Length: 147
View (cartoon, rainbow, N blue to C red):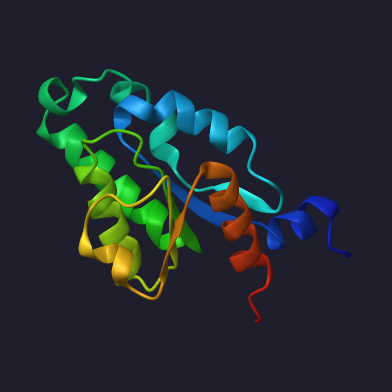
């Protein structure tokens, strides 16, 4: 039995975790839609209905927030790279996601400058001027890896 085309395509995909604040999820969805193949998003937080309210961290309840946090950690763990896009000044969650990716040994690309933390000084962190150069850098990093 031969390998199907979809199985072959799945084997060549490269998971990218898209990190951003909840308020910027619509912009991140647009970025996800234009990610160049073979890159694909592992960030399921973008499509979680209970988290679509800007105030969810206060009114969704502790259990839901814990589940959402664990989901993000799991998605970062299965990604090969984290692309952070801190569009707003309140990017504490993005900084936590960057730290999680670094703890897993994942490369990190930060678009639009730094979230103002010491992570941007690490050799596995790349700072890009804009989202287009960040996507190009992610594509380059993931498709030029050996092994």
